[in-house]
Length: 321
Image 1 (cartoon, rainbow, N blue to C red):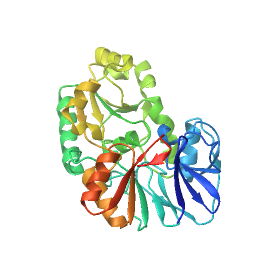
Image 2: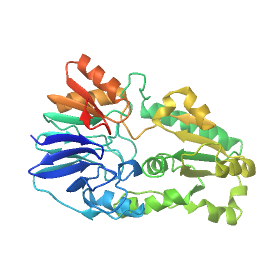
Image 3: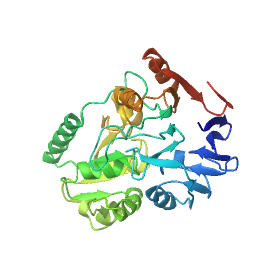
Image 4: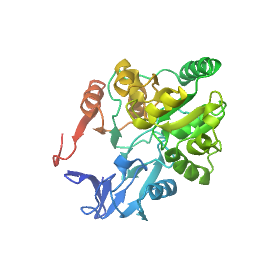
């Protein structure tokens, strides 16, 4: 089985004499990088040779990071359902998930479990109090809220991470209009459309504002998730009376809405909740589990109670533990 290594440069696998960095921020220690998806905290800071999906390569380029495509015999990329192009890496009975998607939502399917001997799995919401409501229930609540606001002539800003979450929100709530979008979101929409994802053609909000359309009754605007303290958010609320609705798995906790200064917040995530994480691990049937990111210590402890040999990875300390 491939050797699992951890150093100050990050987690890696040594396979057939090739050291593969797993979502490394720097590549100098590694022969190749595996890039699971194009969120900024999983991308190398500069150009390097990378095993990644076509979609991830294109999205990384949209973010200003040009990755050099690389291949390695004996490795397999597995769909993880987190964002467009997200993949896990299966190497010699070791499966590294990167970030996973949870339940199916809009055009995104859930993560595919892979039977393996060693599983390295994310634990972003790896604590028992992070359980999300059914998607159907959440959609009913949000659509009812938007309907109520529209009936009062109040415009709505739907906020989520601009890459991944925003595109799902557009697909789920595209029936509301007129619809506009923040340019940060539209930049990634172009890549999604290139790979066959159908999204509404939305006008940039600046163009609508220039034409005076934001003064003409209620509208919906898709924007990055920002605090209510942000000057742009404050201006949209002041000039147009807009109401902000944020979407994040952290919104399971009531305090999240207040900390972010949002009018409303709903727990819609591109990650699995606690129960989905546990089910994913069970379906992979691993002999040993390593947990990374988020509540890795708590999740490993829970898995041990279930009978798994599980340990959290301690990043940046040069050891596994």
